[in-house]
Each structure stands twice: as C-alpha cells, then as structure tokens.
Image 1: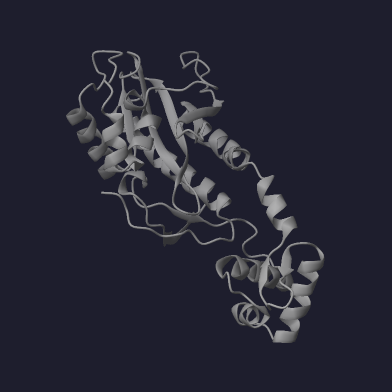
Image 2: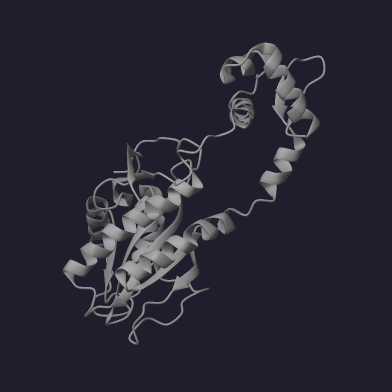
Length: 289
C-alpha cells in the first residue's frame, strides 16, 4: 500500500523509522457523492463553531444559503442538527450525540487493526499484539496473532505488562510529560531479570533513545530469552490510543530483524491511523521533547 507524502506532527518517539504518513485506499479514486460530503461539512462546521448559524454554515460548505438551509432542515428532521428557536443558532442534534455515545472507540481500533496485524505477522513472522490505552491510563492487551513457529510466546490477551520492562509500556511512558513520569518513578522499578531497567536514570535514557529511534525495544527485560519491539497508534488529537508490538525469542530478534520489524510496525501503525482518521484531519500539536 502506497504512503502519502503528508506527515503528521507527533512526539518524535512515536514516529517509526522514517516518518510515516497517512495511506491511500482503493476507494480514493472513486466518484463520491458531493451532497453527502456537503452534509458532512455542515456537521463538522457546526461542531467547530458554537455560534454557527445558517449563513455561516453555508459559507463553510461553499453553498448558496437556500441550498444550505434545505440540507440543514433535512439533517434537523433526522435529528443530526438542532436549530435554536428565536436564536438563529444551529447545534449538533440529539441523534448524532446518541450515536457518538454508543460508539466503542476500543472496538473501532480493534476492527481497524485486526487485518493489518494479521498482515504484519505474516510479513515479519513473529507474534503480533495490539494493546489499547485503558480508562485508568494503563495498557490492556486485547488482540494477538501468533507467529508461524513452534517456538513462540504464549497467549497474553487480557494481561498487563510492567511499563518499564515491556516494549509497549515504554511507548506509553514516552508520551508522558515530566510530571507524570516523575510520579511513576516514585515507586521502585521491579527487577524481573538481570537486564531489567531499575533506575530512573537508566529509564530516562532508554526513553530518550526511543524518541530518537521511533520505536521501543525490550530485550530480555521482562523474561530472559524474550524480546519485543513496539510503536504507537495515535488518534485524531494525536493522543496515544494503542500500541502495536512484535515479540519473539531473543535469538531470532537480532539487530537486523529488529530494524526490519520496526519498519513494518511503522507502516502498519500508519495504515491503522489512516483508517481511524478517514476523512478527518488530525489535530496538530507540539511534539514532546
């Protein structure tokens, strides 16, 4: 799948090797319904302007006022917009809000990631996992595709890993600001193997390397003989919503294969982000340093 030239601004730690951009889809060249697009533009313009009215929405959509009014009336009749009596304002309607409340963002991420993760594992031939950011700020592993080898990790679905001793956990830590990281480091870093990072200085240095390289690496840190490489998946506001990880025996994930895995991870994460952002522009913000 070809990658578009546009590159999103994000924490340096969370770009893959080489900047990853949004990908194109097979439908991009298809003739699209312009009336539907104009209606979507009206909805977005309403969401962006708490003083929106028929005239301002018509300008935003590039429509004559009379045409915009008919579309707004139709959307209002279906419950997607609401006009305030005597105020000329247009608001998002109750049906749109109901649909938004009923949308499970974690499920959307899982469905977008599932086929991509399968292709990733087929290409790299190591076990792939998807973790999602939980409401409490931790990471929940929700989907796993096993490598086609007899020697491979066990099923981890439903488990959580120590943040300082896992590739996925380090991706999460790299998005935290200084205050969050300082609170985390007040607790001792538990040693699981001789390779586990157990000091604040070592962890900060490792996160610094992560930010330079664009992916997290964990070698024998949670369990001897087990290594992993991971990268983040980001939402519309450039917030971390999930982590893709490839894991396998340390003897197979040597330096060359880690670089190979990291490149595939970056492309896979970019494809998932494109699916989540379909038709929407990401919110740009300053990168963490």
